[in-house]
Length: 111
Image 1 (cartoon, rainbow, N blue to C red):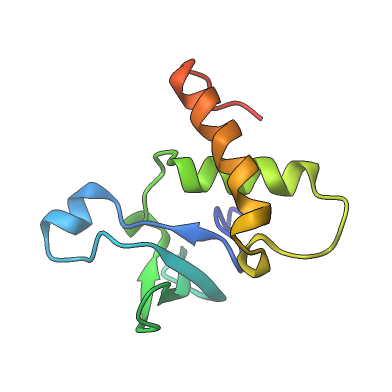
Image 2 (image 1 turned 60 degrees about the vertical axis):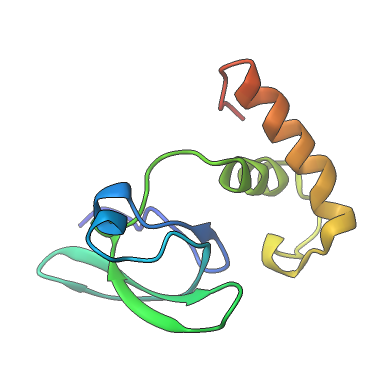
């Protein structure tokens, strides 16, 4: 089995096909990795704004890079502390958002 694509604390979104079938389009935080179901990784997610939780399979989540996701990846790649992205406030996150926007506007989502 492959390693999980997402990790605890990461902000994720439902894939567009799942949203078309009723899944919410808002941001979710990965709370826990769950045992796989027929070889498919499962996660427990929590809606960032409301705290509602749900269990989803990895294939239901978006692989597209968003500003939030890229900012988080950039932060984690350059983070010399052990403080996770999910615990950082706006003053720390804003510079990473600006960097992510700049990279996406240039057409590069690279770290």
